[in-house]
Length: 68
Image (tube, rainbow, N blue to C red):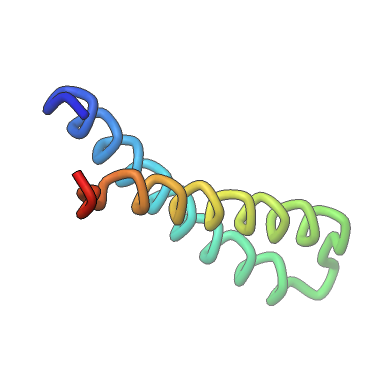
């Protein structure tokens, strides 16, 4: 992996983590609302799970290959 590739992956990883954290706050606010939109909450939670998978994939790509 080239250094620029690693830097791009690391930058993307940070972006995903920030979005994941922001979704936490949005979900909390929606759940606290008495007139909450359950469909919107489910969509946000699904997006959060997708982000979690993408974060895990990127983190595994950034770990150096020990067999090389």
